[in-house]
Length: 375
Ligand code: PMP
Image (cartoon, rainbow, N blue to C red):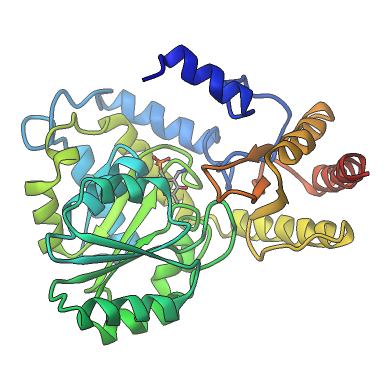
């Protein structure tokens, strides 16, 4: 068994060693899509919460004394905002996904998940007694086939279909209507991660699943650290499943409750997001500008605020990212295992922290960097 030092050295030899670096350059990387995180409005909400005595810490599990009126006020506001029967707040999206996936599917159940689903779902699956099967990305027919195979082999448990509504590393959107029809036909549950859609997509930023009819068989996860600008995650789910989570999810039961101060800020952020049509329109204009710029570089573009530029080899992605960073742009290379082998990429995220001029300058630098590295 190699020591940790030897393992780190091996990572270094393979060019895979990661390190923390300070923020610098124009932000084409963060998930602060609407620019809310440092906004005056959110800072005022924090100050107001502190002034009315909301504590920084909950002091215990929510099942003990940690349950604070701010958690309940947030969950009620979120249920109203998302139109959900009930909601449950977690300290983060990773923790929420891991808890949901480890807890809701039971022994004898099947989880059919997209091949590109977030690592937090894999974390949950590792702790789940249910069977799991991955299907090719955004392939609804493959989901239906996997369910049929499970039933044909005598599987009697419940089926859970797990997908992201808008994929964080690919910027594309799941075939939600098809997945919902399959879920209805097979009496399956949908587990939809809205991390990159919340606050931006759907009516009033309620997410892409808001378009689905009837939500009795849908569980959605809305992270609060991206477009909402704070941290945490709100899960929308039927009341019976909420009760089940409270009683069975280890990551809920045995954890200190999220900060009440953070809960108050997230509640304020929901209010800001619901009234942020102007910010969403601005983001859409930036997306259109970036799409045109990518087309001029001869590169494919997605329809969303996440634009991957897939470069293939890890070293090439790192080199192009480094060239852009030298020119003052904060663009990061995303490499395996975060993305599949051979698909290392730049992940260009559009936020209200940039304008058309910055996007134009980035595209020009990208064109130069890609030529420089390919010739
Ligand atoms: N789901 C997806 C799709 C994500 O991109 C992320 C964050 N990278 C998470 C869940 C985890 O959310 P959080 O950052 O709030 O822990």
